[in-house]
Image (cartoon, rainbow, N blue to C red):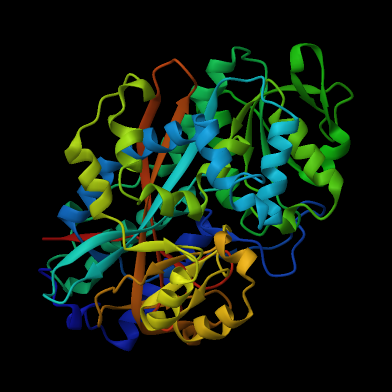
Length: 502
């Protein structure tokens, strides 16, 4: 990289850092780069305060070539996961409760069984995706992007990532970062239009449904603190496209949702006597067993999924995002079948497309590989591995020294639900200032960082029809190197943006 990592971020005086911190946090508070404070219950009470989201003071250096390449391959990923979601037989075998992971993972098995018991009547699916990458430095010092995971449900922080990029541009415009480094100029700071990109996908889905007076339903978690990231989508839909949104938890939807003629989904709002027809169901909940505390919560999800409203994601598309699917796709011949088989769809791909995706993957395998081999390999290589279950949202993985003890307690019948992945090795000695709310200047910490770049995309698709898809923006989440996990919402990471370097 052009920027010497040992010199990033540029050296500033304590007074300059204080000034930048004040400008950054007040910009965040003034521009909706916000969280609700801990203990807030957004679904049931009127908020009386907010805090700024955790942020970096400087954008983080990312090689221009790798960033642009990740943007280009997002279209291939959009098509790939659309094809996976449409292959019922593949999902049955890999994720199902009869043959696949669902036999040993109760959550996955219950989703799969509910999908089978309550078939979908809507042929269209909407995906708002995010493909996450870390920089990987090999022994020669060369850097490449390696994929951490591909998200098909609740791919969050798109709108707030847009605001974070604008905040860093504002700091540059207002202070020039005190002339601290020539790389800090607008030509190296890519515009982040994730908010409009994700909304475009929702609008395509709404229009495809065919009822302009219908509304889009946001399914949200009880006590959601990341409400502003979601509200930005709601405001953009209303102000730019005249599409209204209803926000409901699965708990409330158990009483407020109903199927009427032709399986149309109707939902009662809090203040109207008549229910509203729903064009699209957008899930910002439903990706963890904690979202289904009772059987009725599962039944509500199955009711929504079996309606005529377009699901984002449908249960099969949610299952397609499983870690097990990622591992199976990496096996010889599987990716080739999905991308090169002309029977999969009218879009055409070639061996170069296949190789681009394969080059972005670390070695991975299932713990049930060849009897005991998967576990034995994981035990012997544990210092360079992460074990992943079929979960989203951060905080679920097992790393390095914790692996042998975990394997000692893992039942043989549960191995299929876990994959082992070689650890990505990010470049060292890249620093940044991380700022969290409530700490004043003591909340500003300089630390050796690891940054995860997410590329968003959307896809509207169904059987026997061309896919509508686009790359839809980007996200950077940065954490201290000492932290293995990477979720912003669960407190590990902060929001960041990009400074491109050659």
